[in-house]
Amino acid sequence: MARIVILGAGVAGHTAARHLGRLLPKEHEIIVVTPNSKWNWIPSNIWVGVGEMTPKQVTFELEPVYKKLGVHYCQAKALSIHPEGNDKNDMPYVTVEYTGPLKEGDVDTIEYDYLINATGPKLNFAATEGLGPDNGFSASVCTPAHAVAANEWLQKMIIEMKSGKTKTFVIGTGHGMCTCQGAAFEYIYNIEHALRDAMVREKARIIWLSNEYELGDFGMGGIHLTRGGYITNGKVFGESLMVERGIEWITRAHVTKVEKDKIHYETLDGEFHELEFDFTMLIPPFAGVGLKSFDKAGEDITDKMFAPNNLMKVDGDYTPKPYDEWSAKDWPQTYQTPMFKNIFAAGIAFAPPHLISKPMQSPNGTAINPTPPRTGMPSANIGKTVALSIRDMINGSNSPTHTASMAEMGAACLASTGMHFFNGTAASMTVYPVVPDYEKYPVYGRDMSLTFGEIGLAGHWMKWSLHHMFMYQAQLKPGWSLLPD
Image 1 (cartoon, rainbow, N blue to C red):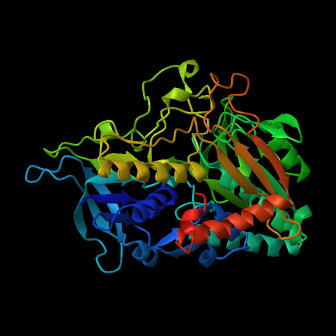
Image 2 (image 1 turned 135 degrees about the vertical axis):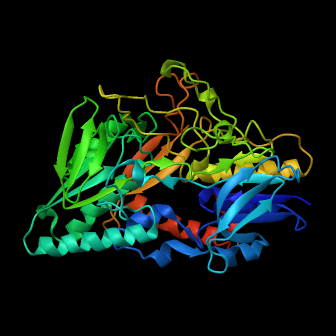
């Protein structure tokens, strides 16, 4: 019998658990360790943030779902990994701190034969002074609770605008090294759509504030899209969407501080600026959750297993080298750690070997460039790939059998630009591959027959339908395994 422990139940961890539970005989044990009692379809939090959905529509309880598969659910926070066991027992284990109501605060150990680190990101609001809804002055849509609070703030603004007041809305990234601009990108358009629906759009100044070098970077070094039979770059695509909706933009910006009604930021040219606001939602940077690792003697080996941002090193090429020498071949294939063959990292938990966008610094030495996105479809693909490899290794394979390099993987994105069944819109985009490969595709780094974008009502219908499909699939309802991840 083998025991597989999965740390985290986000997109990657939950996908791995679903497939392992489906594929492995029942004599094997699968344990999912997560501090959360509920699963959240994070892409739809932006709709909660404008009052178009409720938290109940984007979440469900995890424990009943795992019971369907015979997967053990452990509501706890992972603290440390001990891949060699200790001086009393060679069996590898993790230490966890329970967060559920019955054992809250208790610390325990869980042994494993295989470990998947799918802990996802730490929402690093603390990287910017005054950032975030809990100890700062900005809203967030990163969790359902954050999104509810954001909508409450938004509705207050609408009430005041209906009384004749003008308001400034600033949406974007809250740090020079943020990733996942997608959530902010969708949210700003849904804010604009909500203000039009409330008939107060003329009372609003809406500003996009981002660490991107130019619009349409998305942490992928910019994109070119096939649209209407022509190739358009992401900058033109992004700017046209904002011009059509009267949205201003500021790029190449690193937010240094958020005050009650003012954002301080530095731009790539080294200049410092201030921007007053009435409402702001700024995405935080991501980091690892803070897992530690110790060898058999109890010595700390965290710096050997993890990158400085506490994301786990896997089978990529982390050799420091100039930007011009970076290659698609540097990116991980199997997500197995080099030091321990029974440990994998999936989704946001793995450390990218380098940026995709070109690294930039201001004259003051401040890094201002997006970090690589790994959410959504890439996370699901990686989670499934790791699950299939572990199944085969349990059945006798000496090494991982499946690969999912982001340099060989496509991704589809349906970015909501306003929710309404008749006048809503969404930008439908596909990119192949996510990490550009200029050896294979020397002009644009991507296959332009598979990289395209359109915007319209049909995109909204698809996004709305996919929300319900993924919620259905994640709850393991009949036929779930036939649906694409």
